[in-house]
Image 1 (tube, rainbow, N blue to C red):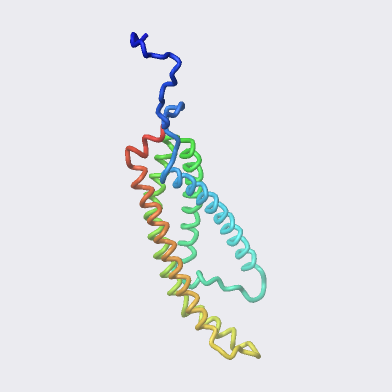
Image 2 (image 1 turned 45 degrees about the vertical axis):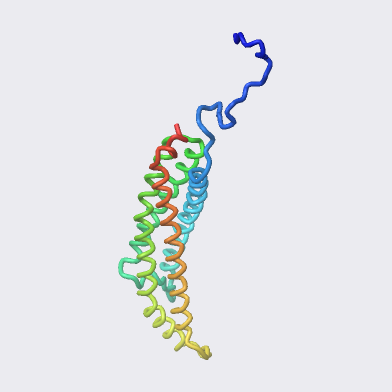
Length: 207
C-alpha cells in the first residue's frame, strides 16, 4: 500500500489500449488481408476446378457422339491438353490448401501462416509457367483457328463481308494482354505474401 497521503485507491489505473486478453494482438494489416484473399482465391479456384472437370467430361461425351466434332482450340497446341490437365490438378490442390491456410490464418494459427508462405512460394513459379503457357498457346492457335474458320466459311452460302479471322487475332492478343496483367498482379500478391509471412513481426501474430 502506498504511504503517499495523496494516494487514492479508487483512482482508475491507466491500461494499455492495445492489450489483448487472449495473449495475441488481433490480426490486422496486410497479413489479415492475405488470409481473407486466400479464402476467396481458394473458393474461386475450387469452383473453377469443378467447372473444368465438368467441361472435360462434356467434351468427352460430345466427342463420342456421331457427326461433326467440335474443335477445341487447345487441341491445336502441342501438349496443350496435357498441360491444361496438369495446371487444373495443381490449381485444385493449391486452391484447397489456400482455403485451409486462409481459415487457419484468420484463427491466428501458426500452421496457417506457414501454409500461406509455402503456397505463395509455389504459386510464384506456377503463375510464371501458367502465364507463359497461356501466351504461347494463344499465339500458336491463331493460325490453325483462322484456317478452321476459313474452311467453315467455304461451306456457308452467305459468308460475312469481312474476314472473321481478324477478330480472332485481335481477340487472342487482347486476351493475352489481359492474362499478362492478371498474372503480374497475382505474382506480386504472392511475392509480397511470401516476404511478409517470413518476417518475425508477422509470425508474432500467430501461435
